[in-house]
Length: 234
Image (cartoon, rainbow, N blue to C red; front, side):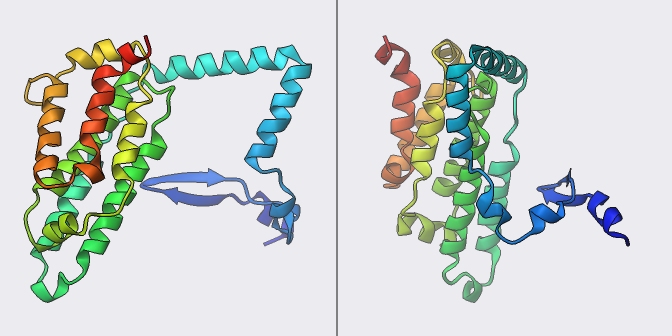
């Protein structure tokens, strides 16, 4: 294959079940040290901010693009249903392993939960719709419920191990993302069983406390944010 053909050929990368095609790198991009010379994101942001001060049109353009982004995202509700399903499946799979294979599997279980929670947190942004953020909170609550309720040696060891994680902090981080206008929606939101969602959430918080896990999962902290933030902001 000629050099030109190689440069024209696209590389296919896989993210989850989706395939993302990216252009082939040029010789310059492939050369040693190229990555070191490229501007890091923070430097790019600084340059953009400096340019914006000198050119008001840039500020207007950025504000317009952001408003368009928010408007588009307001119409979208990202689903997170598969994350709790993955947690449920894996925790129960660990429980079904022969006893000699369950040894120290709580570490693997903790890694799994961490990856699932981090994946949700990294996906959700402040400009996302109420429904997207609501779905994210419910997915993490559901994952925590699996940790709290699942029986078996691995799940029990995971609870006893006290995780030493920031799972709860990531939950509260998403709760803090809700816009002021979102709280009126949260106050009347319904859970899958038809009850008010905040009451439904509180049940999981109480279960976590009984298990001695609230310090790790911070469900009561999250509930406090969801119930009181509009009034705290005045």
